[in-house]
Length: 297
Image (cartoon, rainbow, N blue to C red):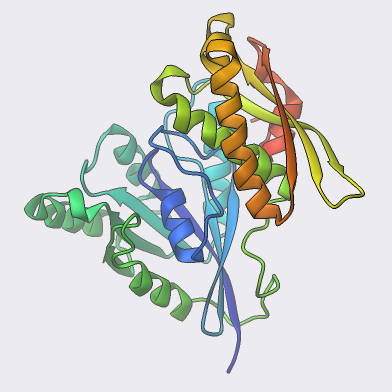
């Protein structure tokens, strides 16, 4: 049979469930998730296989009104992902409907020439009548080639969406080996896994203004890997939150991240974390290079 391969950009407002959907389509975790909006900062590619089709899935940052440099760089990355895609998956949270940020996304997509697939997510938490009205409204505005109702968290409807995506990919050789799940480097994934633990363990206590930068990576002769990461925060008042009493919270974050990184790499990991207060970390070119964003956006 003829192999097919294509690029699918997953677009949505913050917290629509883009990373959860990409992970579900791949069948394994490749993108970090959290209840916190704007968790995804860069264009991370997950790689999924369905029959003879290879799907290159761009998990893009959420579309929102950008303010500071980091916001502008994230939104630019999302729209650039759309420009090169064979299909756009327009993901909308069916439980919240067209809020201000979702409305902004739809307005930006109206009239664009790319082939679109409308996906209403979190249908398990949505009012059915409202959801059907929303689907009709979005269909009229975006003219998608197909509409899917899914729950990315539960997996409902994901297989049907994956099969459809596979059926519309263009003919061509696969771009990655069959066993490769992402184009992200181990260094990037390790930093993302630590950032995920920051969000998960600190919840609303830590603002969105934090970053994790891998400073040193050493593969040791005994087969283990030593990783030194810096957690950058904007204010002194946040340092105590990240450290916790007697350093207990930082230790907990480090233990959870080390376990995930070790499982990902398939070897023992020594993880060293330290916290740096830098009010202007989001203006640092190194941070942008670490996650593949355009500093000049």
